[in-house]
Image (tube, rainbow, N blue to C red):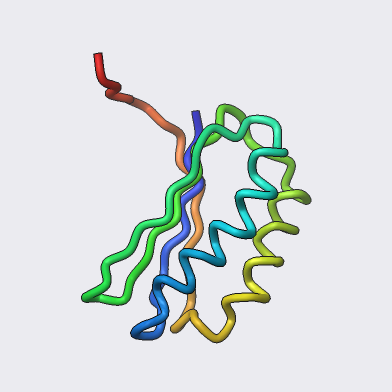
Length: 98
């Protein structure tokens, strides 16, 4: 399993709009990509920071992923406050309900 994590800051008062745009774009792209498992968008409203995490069983096609990211980027350019950080992680341990 792999995690793709992206984080950054948003301008105050824009987090709900950002979350909706994230969902609108990625719910149409991610489920179509082989290996997609789940995705989450989370926020710390007090700090105006956000974290988006996508869980994959296998690394997706980079071209498809880049296209989805660029589509979202065009819609959130005025919401983002500063640079973002994106990184792939290998899942080493998992805990699930019994």
